[in-house]
Image (cartoon, rainbow, N blue to C red; front, side):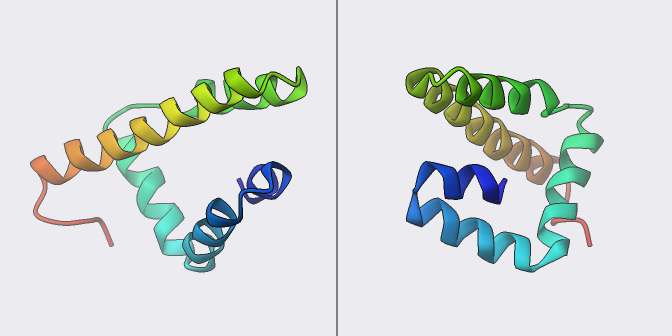
Length: 87
C-alpha cells in the first residue's frame, strides 16, 4: 500500500497510510471487516497493480477509487450491523 502511495507521489495518501499503518490494529480492523462481510479486496488490488504496470493512470485512478469506495462501504455496512469496531 505504502509503495503505491509513494510511487504516485501523492503526499496526502502517503501521510494517511503512514498513520494507518503505524497502528497495526487499524489494518487488522479493515481485514476483519472485509472478511466478516465475506468480501475480498484481492481482485481490486490486482486491478490497481495491473493498471500501474501497464502505465494506465486513468485505469489506476478508477481502480483505486473503486477500492477506497468499497472499503468505506464495508465499514459502513459493518457499523450498521455491529455496535462498534472490532478490537
